[in-house]
Image (cartoon, rainbow, N blue to C red; front, top):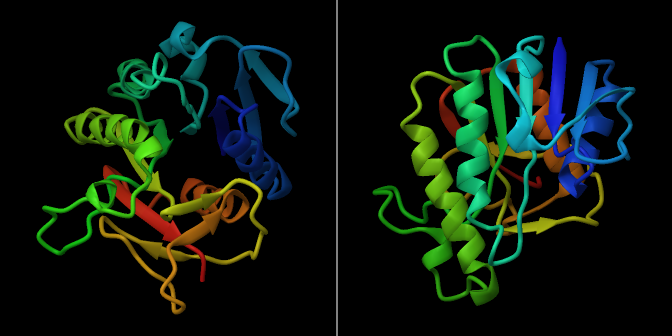
Length: 209
């Protein structure tokens, strides 16, 4: 299995690369600058400059793009559209490192996590942009995508416990009533999805056991 991780130098990207390499997968890092990940193969190119030819060799492409500033947050939509456009009609699977704000709080799917009173105000613009990108992704019947939402508390420096609970569209809590996962455990879930491929054109979510 040949895998590419776009934005492999980011916090999530690095850990996904590390997890995949340690499991013996053939991993290529796609980065703008010097490769800082564990991948031995590298494509140095901006995400927006990638072409269909760049990605045609891969079985799976992981989109680990992340933007945090007011000016760049809209790129969650434009970057994902670009990747979808160049993967359109191919067998290559696209795994998207998503957000938690768009997880539903009720079975009717009318209430979002990001709309709750406890959701941090500072993260609402990011959550809204990621939710919009997910809605646009749902319209893509020409791409073999999977959108992977983390738990509400997504901990960059959290420990790697080695296990997680797989959820779906709704916010899932563990036995302690928590919605939390570390980047390291999230990376395990992403690589599991790489190798199983059971959720084509679906959004899934993960939470620590």
